[in-house]
Amino acid sequence: MNHGSSGLLLLSLYLLLAVYLMPLYPNAAPEQDLINWASTTSLVERTTFDISKAEKITGRKFESVKRDGKAVYPLSPPGLAIVSAPIYALARIFLGEADAGNLQTGWFILRFVISSLPVLMLGFWLYSSEADAFSLGALLFATPLLPVSLLYSSDVFVAVLVYLAFRVIFDFERIFPGRCFTAGVFLGFCLLCDLRTAIPITVFFLGLLFSGRRDLGRRLMFYLSGVLPFAAVLAFYSWSALGSFTALLPSGIPLPSFYSVYEAWFSPARGIFAYAPLLVFSLFAVFTSKANAGLRTGVKYLLIVSGLAFAVFQVPKSGGFAIAASGLVFLMPVFLDPLFDGEADEYSGLWRGFFFTASLLMCALPLLTFPFTPTGLSYPHNSFWEPMIVAHGFYPATILGWFGIGGPWVLAFPAAVLLLVLFAAFRTARYPAYFAGGVLAGLLLIGNYVFFTDLEPKKADPFIEETISSTLNRTRD
Image: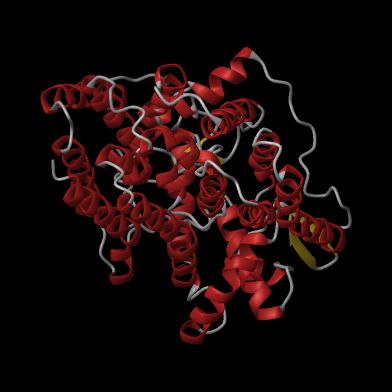
């Protein structure tokens, strides 16, 4: 069945794509990428989280910050800057002090090590555990994990650590206190990077309550001993840098509605099941899996359900740009665990091919141009990304830009990657003919949606003009 060679092909393609694409748009894209870079450089250069100098370097006035006189502090946890500091310190030996001239190179190094490399390492681990090409391709290419792994953020780093914490505790019939401490440390550091980690921390704690009476107290104590020191550091940072223990907590959580459920789950603009429909296999496995009993499975599906419920409360407001359907990336490997476990192996090859293809295209097509979507659009593939490529010739930033090479042919490599990913999944399919039929149906459906309809005419024009103008201005600067 060539599972081994297909897995290696997928891992190689992801590595090459992660090196090839350079989605850094300092003026046009959301600011969080730059704030993360600024926090890391400031911590190393000046041993402070004050990023005021980075504003001068980038020429951009940050919004998600607290201003205290001339000092500027990001309204985000410090964990990413802390874990990135040694990497930047090493790169600084060769690049020199952070400035506008080495911004792109320094950002690329940090992004690759912190975001892309963890996905690749998780993929190699799953490959060594004999995960099939379908599930490996899903992890690497067919969820919003793909575009987010090409940015410099904590989402992917946290996602991998949360999944490792899950496996460290619940992969074993007998849960030892030492493993609980290890998982607690993983999750505690994740909390220092992303407050949403409170969800898996709570779910794993509830799971441990049902792990048996023997040594239960020690397991809980060791688990909390791993988590709480990082929570204390986070509280101290919030108080010392931002002036309040609650400064990092969100304010004004909106009440959900039926429409917000649609937006979070099914909307073509930002719905998780619209961008990664193969995740429905995870939900089907709740009812159809032959291994749907036991603590591990219960914790896994409680975390999936909790994540889906949480997504309803974090639908972004209209205005600005974002990576679509990225709100649950920090739980994505857990969402895919039913695929890694083979719980979807018995599903129809036709549906496997269709869902895989649709997920791949929905998540990867934005990478062929400007990868961020205006949050005010309802059908961004159709109204924003298609005209960006076809009508305006706005092609992705790649490493070839370092050598002054651009133009439409830079699309050739990522397009070839998409075809090879489909080929790798097809050649290991149990029923290739059915899988191929599903692939064809996915191509026709998504192709028609993207290229042969006009769902919100002219609505994206202001966003397109803004994106192109901001990018050109940055190029001239």
